[in-house]
Image 1 (cartoon, one colour):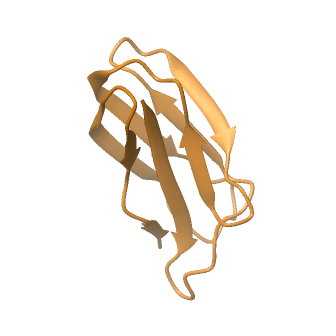
Image 2 (cartoon, helix red, strand yellow):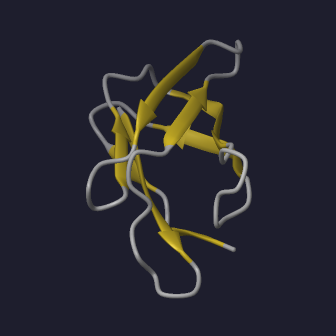
Length: 88
């Protein structure tokens, strides 16, 4: 399965480019990828399961706050598309 999310700034809904995004499974194993030019990141080839946690920790001075999404479910051969994460 896969998980996809897009990070946007709250004020103008511009994509957040190059931001590191982490995805952890229920065992605590973590993957990390930067967002693309359109603010998206997609984690692929994930084992099916529940309890995935997506987190974003902005660098000091960033224009947005941290984001955490818990309880993500991944299904085989499907993309779990999270809603846009609009950061304040």
